[in-house]
Image (cartoon, rainbow, N blue to C red; front, side):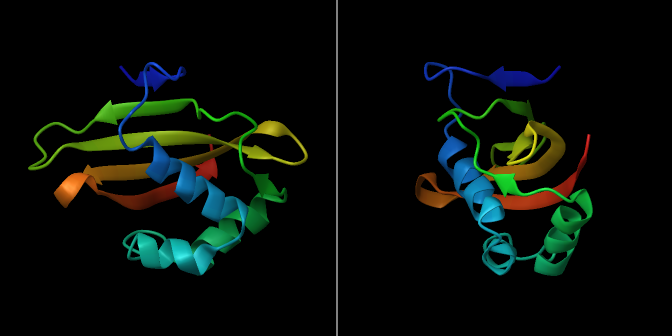
Length: 121
């Protein structure tokens, strides 16, 4: 069952990383996202194509806290989570577009992130 983070008291330690990824996506900084995620699953071109196909302008969410659906990945060597992030658009507000991420704990409190998919849910 997915776990949800909705309040400031119940935040995931990697939320700032997710906020940064969403901000870069909203700014159209697809090449920066590809570098950050090492293009493991989605390239800058694939991200740009998905947003173009959706046909609306992705914007940062209006609130400081994103409603994340988080599922811990069991059996991972280091802590890791599958994270679904609902996105907002200028035209719709909260949209049907969802960003799927894998977030892994790294050294010294850092987090690695991979973009698994960007699609209509």
